Image 1: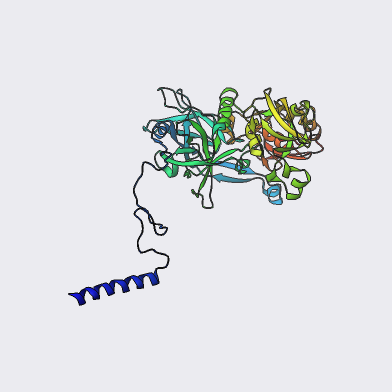
Image 2: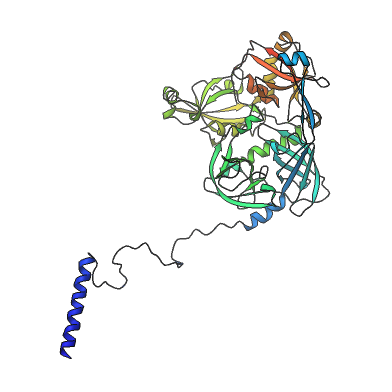
Length: 485
């Protein structure tokens, strides 16, 4: 047995020597519980000792939201339109006529009251002759268009209140925080009610998309990564408690379908617009009386020259004489940093704050001048009054019935030409409906004011009800200033 034992021992020693030669720094033996070298392999077990924030629970918010979010289907009748291009062909053969065939569309909406008021996007119901609303329980009703606001892309419709309808309560969109869980609820791609989850990935975003509908576009979107597709427009963005914090409106996509980012109109802007549309038929906008710029709209040289690389806030380029800002002492070169306790550093943030107040409201403005912080109260004026003052005429927005009759998304009716520049420089008559100025769409008096900002020459386009074709009037040397808020 001795030779066998000696051979076994020799073999073991040789094995250990070979192993140590090819596995450097690995001990032959290790204490129990110690780890010889780091490992990327871990047990797939759960430890109660590990830190755990707990999963977000969306069940209650989702269940309540789908009951109050509706599917909207629209129908637009076919129509013939006439266009006069002012060219030789039009002079010889008259106006050209085009037939636009019937169209249909769909989107989403949110019930905001038991008696049937529903908020949706303006672009969902624009120019629609018939609006049909279907609830999650298959209850279907014909809706009436109450009013629209293209500047914020908000519209209000109403269904008969023959039953107590489920509805969502508004939350405070100012309290929304980056990284907060949210749900997007709507009817995408003609599917039934669909709920997707994501987080708030940015606030105060501006896309320029609303400028396709209004020259006075207001954009301060909440950006999320919740999946939103065509058909979600007008649907709800809710927090985990089921409160409405936004109306889904747009997506950023090279293909037209969801590609990672979606955008919602903040609830605080929606609530103000809805209240005005129901009460007045149009949104009453407060006017601060300044022209401004932020870092995103300036070159590196401009930022350095104005000291904005060392300052926060929105830079005041100019102040409109006689405006609330001028009366409060705000001057060119100031940096507006807070409005009613809310920080503002970009154009969308400033627009979003002012957009929620009425003419005559007093707002607290904090601004920086030469490094010193100052606080003043500014009374907002009426944006529409300034437009009437500059042009010397009286206007009013079209009502819902007029928009339907003329197949328009909006427009401004001249009720009195007055004795100003319109009367002196044009042959315009009362009853003229303005649809565009300087190739910008005009849906409201706010749009006129926006175009007047910085423009002393205008080309006004529109038509007279009962007459075919478009009319164009030129106006020069308008004594106006360039204010945007």
